[in-house]
Amino acid sequence: MDLSFSQKPSMELFIGIDMGSAHAKGVILGGQEQIGACERPSGGDYRGTAEKIRNELLSQAGFHAEDVSRSVATGYGAKQAAFADEIVTDVSCHSRGLYFIRPSVRTAVDVGDLYGKAFRLDGQGNPLNFVMSSKCAGGSGRALKVIAKVLQVGIEDIGELSLLSKKPVEFTTSCTVFAESEAISLIAEGVAKEDLLAGIHRALAAQLHSLAERMGIEQEYALTGGGARDIGLVKAMEEVSKRTIYVPPEPHMTAALGAAIIAREIAIS
Image (cartoon, rainbow, N blue to C red; front, side):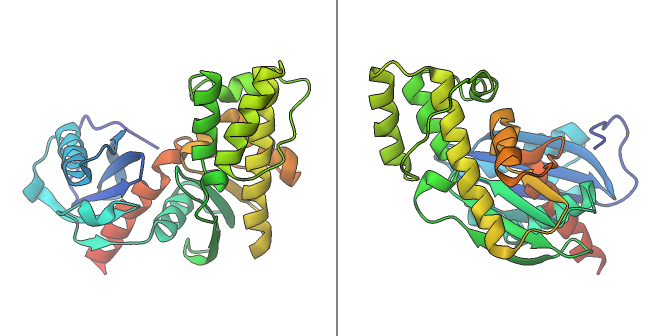
């Protein structure tokens, strides 16, 4: 995706905001071209964070709020984006964003901070159906954060470290709370960090892949969300599914991009 914004677009402006539980993302389109993108922690003030995202996007593009034709919000805190003209489901936004980036994708798994979701797309980028993990954070990226904290490893480092494993641990639970306790016990037994990380990656991958299997997997298979930036999780998903999995260049921005595309589609319809 072209993130160059040295020239102002001659077409209308559209903003997409993805207010995730942990991170907020935004994309601004000038016509059909992406001319800005940003991300920041959601924090405790979702409304204020949404405004900061919008202001940063406008600053990148060199425009003002009144220049925006339409805005769409999605995600956990979408209702707090007071300036949004519409709120659209994250599955719909992920679908539109994926279709824009890779029209051949038909099955996708989104690894969010609180939930994991699997969904199928038709040939026009519309969601056909989806399934979501339970309320337990075991089927989400939160599991990786919890284990990283236990091991005192940066979340950005756990993927590479897990690839060094020679003997991955088999976790006996899918619950994040119990997995944390299990990890603490295994550390006391002298189990290597990389083996613990490889084990939790495989456990999470198995849960996420089972969501996709419940719908019936149709190629091409993609992984989105913040968790898709973890090379260890991508590798584990490919091993569990025995498939090559497509990961967008910026997998955490897919829903924000899709929201901006939907804003454009609504405006011109």
